[in-house]
Image 1 (cartoon, rainbow, N blue to C red):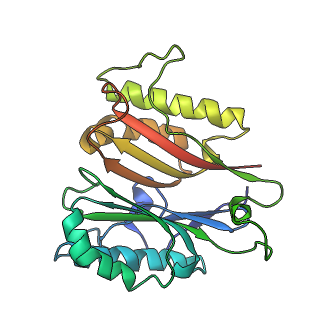
Image 2: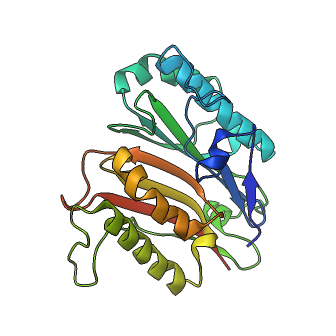
Length: 251
């Protein structure tokens, strides 16, 4: 796998366990982390949804520029907001200043983002080119040299018999989720180092940071994927505390 970590500004994220962007073999598909309205010093911009949305897309623009890409190459956008009315009132207009063409897009209202004052987080999937003219769109997701992108279903703390491991125990559930991810990766001939994008849904960001962060670091060591972390009100079963979905590049 020919992997490129994409760093735009000297990012605060470099010490936080994720890359702002990761492109894969040979730089045909770019996955950005979920980015927010932070300034380079780590503080959120003031002024509410509009300024936060503008700063978010400015940061994404920096990542795209570092990868020699543009917003019109974005094929998928996922927007998380905590206040839909505020986004409709001012965030959409800021977004429109950056996009000329419309990518496939999903918008979700979530309970909380990484900082309680964050109002918006956006992640992108970008086609960096290289597909022969006239090829089906799905070819853009293929990795060259016979490689493929592997999309894992969201993994939870299920035991093989269907019971839930670590009911009420954040650390045990984190261990079990990554154990289940590892089983799928190995079956596909991949490892945690193959993961290029991770999305984590939790019932409590504070509890995840306290109990799940060390588990996650032990899995990825220093080879972190682009990632997004959001807090939601519930998962498929009330016993589940966390669900993680990953995309991996495999040979």
